[in-house]
Structure formats: C-alpha cells, structure tokens
Image 1 (cartoon, rainbow, N blue to C red):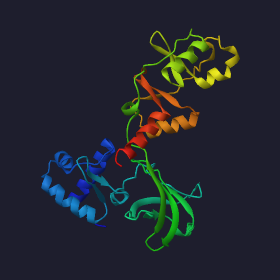
Image 2 (image 1 turned 90 degrees about the vertical axis):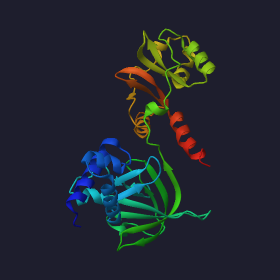
Image 3 (image 1 turned 180 degrees about the vertical axis):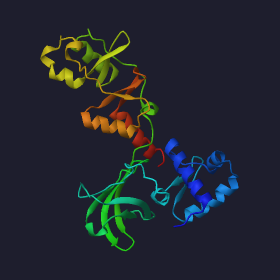
Image 4 (image 1 turned 135 degrees about the vertical axis):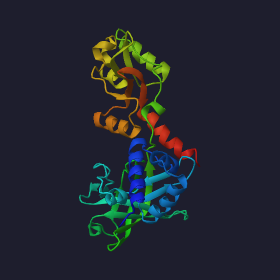
Length: 293
C-alpha cells in the first residue's frame, strides 16, 4: 500500500490526536494541527476510508478513528496492549486477534449475525463453537455467540450473536457519588448497623478529622454479630482500596473483581473525592440501554 506524503501526514496526526483525546477526531482538528485547508483534509479522509485505514463515526460527537491497518501502514506499534482477544469455550485463543466487527443482520427479531474479521488461523474455530469477542479497547464491547460459518481465505468468522454488552467510556468521577455517608472510628458496631439501615447502604468509609482511616461493610458487622458493642475502629479494614477520579469505570470494575469488593473510594490528589459502588456502574450500564428503548 503506497500512501502519498500528505496521506501519511494526515494519518500520523490522526493517530497522535486519537491517542491524546481517546475519542473520534474531527477533520477540523487535524487541519488546525497541520495548518491545512479543512477541505483538503476532508477529501483525503475519503481516500483513506476507501483504503480501510480510517473509520468514520457519525453524529455530533463523531469524527474519524484510525483502524489497525493505519498503524501497520505507518510502521507504528499499535500501542502493544490494543489487542481485541477472542475466546472459544471461555478459553482465550493465542495467536488470534480481532481486527474488525461487522453486524451483518440486525433486522430480524429472532436473530442477529456478525462478521468477525481476525488475524490468525480461522481453522482454530469450527461451526458450533461458542465464542466471545472482546473487550474492545475503547468502548469495551463484548460479543458472545455461536460460529455458524467460516471463510478461511478472507479470515472471517460468521457468528450468530447471543449477546452484546458495552461499558460506557466514562470516568469514575462521572458516575460516583459525593461522600455523604460515613462512620467515625469510635462508633459501636450496633450504631453502625443502625446507620446502614437508616441510610439504606451496605458499607461506608470511616473518617477521622476529615481523613480516611478505614472502611466498614455489613459483612464485617455480621462477622462480629456476637460482639456488637465493639468499636468500628476495631473491626474496620485499614487497607483501603482507592481509585483516582480519572480512572475509567471499566478499570474500576476490574479492581473490584480483583479485590472482591463492592465499592471504591474515589480520591483526587490523595483527598477523598467520593465513592463508587458496583451498583452505580450497573445502573449506568443498564440505564444507557433502557433509556433508548
């Protein structure tokens, strides 16, 4: 694939901007960076799209994003970790990665199929295999379904889609809550239990002189149900798991799963900013789904 000098210049700037902003890039943004006419950028983008080096995202917040081919065309490493994996029967298939997903049919009520373009050996998959694709890097889309066909020449798997889910590309500070409810170290477990019941919560941080010193959950109280007069400070967990306010909710979920916790304290420059729970994230995911029904 032979690109012109201006095409290489535009593609390189698109990749740079995309890495910086982590969103679709407007043609005007590229024009401003390169000090070129927006019409020139627009025309060249059409050519780059025809070469499958650029994808267009419609809508007010749309723009252009580079495809995996764009990185290879310029000899740029695709950030190493930008690999969309594929699993067969819940086992990750090594040496295979997804490079493109196309929904082939979405108009039939009882079925939806998708074409999965891969790099690697399609013969590792057979009709009837249950596969999972994803998560994708930016939108964290995960697709599960059954292989119903295979094109070994063009490296395509045809998939009968069972489910599609996505975790919004939001920060924990976008959906977390200000720290309204908290305990103090010298409260008794009985007082803490009554506080949880009153506020309808299942856990809360422990604060002393505006400093975070621990966290207590209903589970901790249940474990000490025969010692309900104990002080919170005697039972609370002191190894507090926190996340910076700019961490994405997908990464927050991974941290929750890793440490088997249902809530994280959000911090900003080491000061308590708020709290986010697994329920907050699930409400956000299902809310985005149902508000469009």
